[in-house]
Each structure stands twice: as structure tokens, then as C-alpha cells.
Length: 322
Image 1 (tube, rainbow, N blue to C red):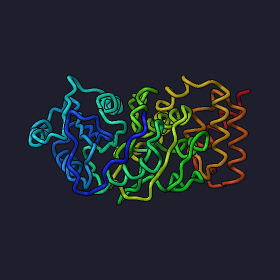
Image 2 (cartoon, helix red, strand yellow):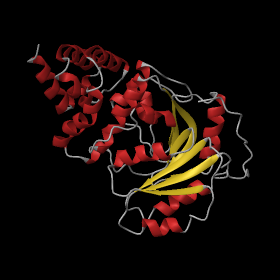
Image 3 (spheres, rainbow, N blue to C red):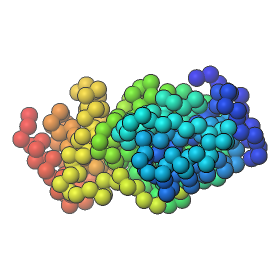
Image 4 (cartoon, rainbow, N blue to C red):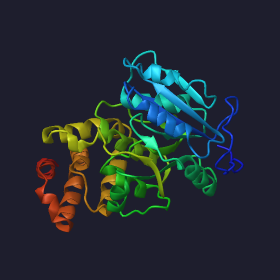
């Protein structure tokens, strides 16, 4: 990705014409979101700085009135609508957005969220500051629910780049929602999002894979989007489903890494204050001795792990393996 000239920062800049290659694509994946997608689109169209930007809505073969809502906006030259011929999985639709995006960077906004009015301006300012990096994933705060707590739990802070095994640490616990997150489009060249059925942890494994491919990460101090709920959160599933869902999401990652890399991931968890037991469960059959040792150390450091039944289940499984 070639270094770009700084994008104009004037809040009333004219939107990019469709025949110009944009810096940034605002991607809105939508499936049966007729009641909310209009708000998401409007939040994109009303950005304070749309210079060198496009808006891409990918309608995932919706069967409600989503298409009718989108027709009200198609006259806007900065907006494109792509219609999938048939419905694909949630994460595969995100990959469709990455493939169809014309921008070097893709900012997602889910159809039931909406962007802060100055989100694009803040992102473009940060991209310029970082000299438009090729392998880069950037996000900020949400007005209601965001990623600050997992970041702090991993010993990382906002406003600073992190990479390598340090970048693995927050994602061994929980995924980073694409909504409100800006990805270098190159992510799709490394597989994009793993297309699995179990929603919440799948972005966890995708981001760990991105870290292993040399992507750098950063959380901004700016508020970028607004959301109240996370419909795919693991907290909404039954306890009996917790570990199977996490394992299903991590299977594509584990198929791509060798045992030495798996050991590195377990060692990276040492710097994380509280570790999701699903992470250890995923690696227990692969490298049981390393997982057992790390879990015992973690138990001594943080006795609260003992109140989590999945923690003990995984530890006992490791105890009976070589």
C-alpha cells in the first residue's frame, strides 16, 4: 500500500466521486435489518468528513424490506449497494465487504449500530499519523459498550500500537467486534474473518491469526460508534454451550498453526490478568502439559479462576494427558 498524501481534513469537504479510488470504505453488512439499516446508512452519509471515502452496503439476500430502505439512498454518488445472490454466513458477509471494498481501509458499521459523526475524521487523522500502514487494525471507544476492559485486562492501553504476541493477549479472551473497527483491506489477503457459525468468539481467532501475520493494532481514545447491546456475546449462551462454541470458533485457527506456535499462545496468556477458560480448553488436547502448567500458575496468581467450572473441567482433562 503506497503512502498517500494527507486527506483533506475540512469538515465540509466534498465526497469522493465514484471513479476515484477512495482511502476508506464504510462497509455496512445487512441482513433483515429494515428497521435499523436506514439509521446506519444515515450515520455514514452524515459524517463530518467524507473526502476520499465510499459507503458500501452489502445486502445479504434479505427477505424483509431492507432493499426498499436502501433504494431511498441509492441516488447518492458516494453510496454503493451490493446484493448477495443468496444468504451467506455472518462472517462470510464481512469478507464479502472486504472483497468488494474499493478503499485501502474498511470501517465496518453493523446495520443495527451507528457511527459517531466525527468517526471518519478521527480515523483519517490517525491513519495519516501512522503513515498509512499496510497491516493495521484500528478501533475506538463506543458511547455505551466497547473494548476498553479487555484491553486493560491484557495489560495494554489506548493510543499505543501493539503487535506480535502482545497483540494476541486481548483476543484470547474475547473477539473484537467489527462494528466501529477499521481494517486494512489487506486482511482479506490473509483469510479475512474465519467463517464459522458460532458468532462471538470467531473474531477472537481471526484477530489472533492477523497478529501472527504481522498486523499491528491500536485502540483510539475517540468515540467512533454507538451501541448498547452485543447480540452475539457469549454471555447470552447457555453454560453448556460455552466451551463448544469457543472451540468451534478456534478450530480454523488451530488448523493453521503448529505446536510451537500453540505453545507461544499459551505463554502469551501469562500477561493476561483473567483468562477465558475457553482459550485453555481449545489447546488442552493439543499441548496438555503446557496448558496444565500455565493454568496452575494462573490459579495461584488469580484464585478467582477457581469459581469457573470450565476452568476445572479443562484442568482435569489436562491432568490425565501426557
